[in-house]
Length: 637
Image (cartoon, rainbow, N blue to C red):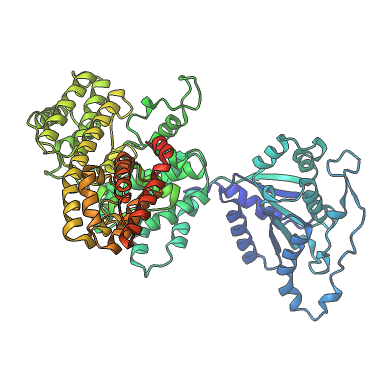
């Protein structure tokens, strides 16, 4: 395979071995992350091996805001050389000797552009590197130097013009030109100074083929760690896929590639043998992960906007960066440049967002989702899930699956609400692209009747976290909802949520009798149900179950509880209202609390003193604090 940067390497070598002072600097340019620093350093090492007379001083200008920082870096590199010579170091550095008001003509117009007393080296390199033809100074990260551009280039120019040193500059020239366009004074601008100082410019291209193997070996150095070995082999096996996606990204940033491979080490740590050995799955995962990572690292895609791209119907999304529908939005542009199916997202978009936005990998749920993808399809895989991948089906198989899923609905065989929601989306999408004779209205009617039947017969599978699972980032069971931007899909989704809400309320009403019984017979068991200390036990911490208990029955049971438990229960019941933004469902109890407060007030009036009365008064005051927040409660509701 050809080396696309061979010409750059040869020019660097040619420049460095010149036998006469070139009297100009060599600029090695390229975008951030393209590998130009690595290439120069690699070239330096090769030159050192072939010519031991060559001496290099390498300085990064990143963040440098005064000349002294540069000279400190020179000193650090020169010190080992000086230490080996029989001379007194203090007498060799003539600090301040060269300071003066030397005038430098930077742009060649015959006029002095600046008083360069800040740009003249304090350290006299000639005292140590007397053979200037074999001395090369390398200044990296020029565009990220905090010094004024004229000052730093004037400083560098002194070494080239006055001392005859060879100087290699490494920079993202586009950034320097951008700074210039943003308003720097014309006679100070980069292009004018460049004409004076830089005699040759070479461009480095991101050469992933040249660095891939060394990059992987560098990252996965812990071969004694099992998951490192697994990850390394998986990445190497898919080298062609990774290189293809990298090239299709058009970002040419090898540093981003390095970040991606580092992240892959973390991801492959959660892959078990079943997943890692499924080549089709690993290829899709790597392709998708590479593409998303490259776009996010480049700042093109924001993690929280992933759902706009990872959406079967993103074209229907209506999200564009402009009002002209003839101009593709950035999600269309991303989709178009990759040879990749962004609809096959492997697991819920919420897990992708969690990782790219917060660095969190929900390993258990992700692994479970991956094992439920098309890559592990078996005879037991439900037909609706096979139909989700309709784009891969032959016509006769597509028709068979449509009929099979329809028959399952007709026979009321499906009680998984996530599957029903998926089927609604699939049918709506097929209707929208004329793959079905059903209208959107037909689908709404059919699903509405279906939901009414399975909820009235108590067949629907309703459980605690079903809201979150069905209404996460636009998907369920590792698959995005098809047609989710169609208005009728939103209508069906709202209808499902309404049925779930009613069913959960019914469950709470049924459970409320158990709470009342516990207050009477086992009062010590009531506190953990509400205190929130253990969410597995505190099942009513954020659930409005109290509204289902008659106020007089609750108060009668409350008054008969032991005083310590009575005091603690009053505290934990009101503590639940400290964060209504998180526990909005509790708003439904507000009216019930108002009735309870009135009932307690009526009880207190004729009561005599005592500890129990003190506790009841304290509870009464806490309840009034809740009611005083009524405006906040109403607003949140």
